[in-house]
Length: 127
Image (cartoon, rainbow, N blue to C red):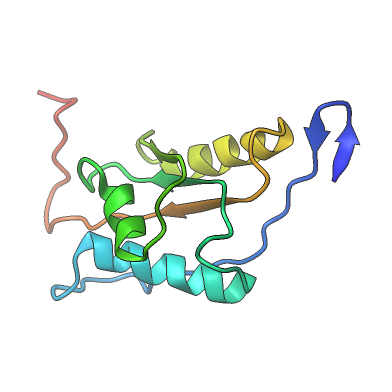
């Protein structure tokens, strides 16, 4: 729905979450897929109902979003991975909302995932 010239309204249709904790038997791909499936059920949208996907992650590795969506058969759309440290989730949501407001996309999926190792967080940014 347009709310002005070149501007469209944005709404969240559904949410999903995997419980926080240590899940030794699950990969980060498993955790992300669980959350995406939960959000799809909540939104009552089909797997094919999206123009693009935005994934927030920092430590999940190259193509992590593609692995999650590929495991669910959700391919053939642009998939953006947003890495902005602790602000990754908010940044992914903001970019996704702007892609709708601008008219670039009509319906998008936004999800985040992380599986942290025990102990101190290591970063290649710091020496």
